[in-house]
Length: 86
Image (cartoon, rainbow, N blue to C red; front, top):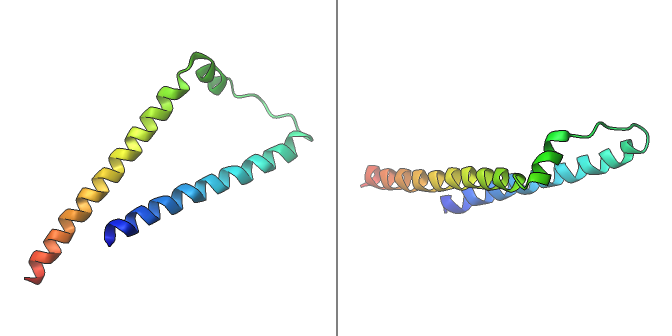
């Protein structure tokens, strides 16, 4: 049950940040017509060199590791709670 809660919270955070990014993109579109924004050279360079995928893989690996750690920690805490009850 606790694992479900952890996954639900992670999904909520993920979808909330996706919604925020969409809202920011819409605001950026509206302001782009009035104010010229400077281009981000680093992102363009990473995209051109194909290294952006390395960044994405590293971020996903870290996120996966954190989720795996939380799951194992939840199992340990559940086992300890069970021992305390007995």
